[in-house]
Length: 322
View (cartoon, rainbow, N blue to C red):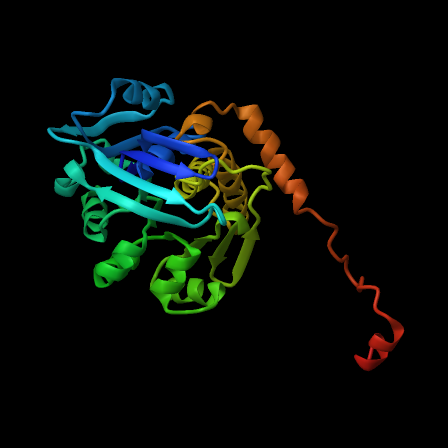
């Protein structure tokens, strides 16, 4: 199965406690495409300027990413710069955002893209997300959406309407709370579920992620790392691994979503080990599978068997009437 992603391909300037980089490849669609490409063919729709380097186009193509939908326009590509806190690498300050050619971006899908069975609407204006969904020839098997505070704060009504039309929503913890106006992460996910999607994934950085579906919830930890170099793109890589697994396996059951969350956490853990897509680009299937198994073992334990109870202290058992 193939996945269509529509979003941003950008150049980032980043400073973290581990160092700094200027003008490196970034953007939600770039991270998602490379992450997902390990499992399924990815078609990318985005816009870049005439400053976009051929080496970065070759990098995307080396992963088998279909770049026929990567539009080139006169001007500069989307540019973002930010600095991460030396106290908490999960906290960052945006120093500059220049939309450049992305400001005029109006994605138009070609006939092949309109028939893709899986669609990921990466972080962008919800009006653009809706316009892409409206162009699909038929309803995809799965439509997923990511967003951020700029749209929650400035385009709430449009975002609410778009969310009603999708199956899966990705938000980070702060975004989910802000959008739902709920303090509890679980309550926030439930409020978003009530709007229409069947699944909500709350990304929690170093605390992992919560997958909430009707009547069920699953919490996956982040893979424990000694050193985090650059968290930029970790959430988009998480989504790429997540959707890539679902599309490759075709398993949209609760168990399929649980495995997808584990894989998303694994892919995201590789991304933060370097700046830009450097580590993500060089991954091998054995590395991914080894860490997938390691994370599975990390959370594995022996459940209570039928009629088995916890080893209660006798006085506790008496108080409970046992």
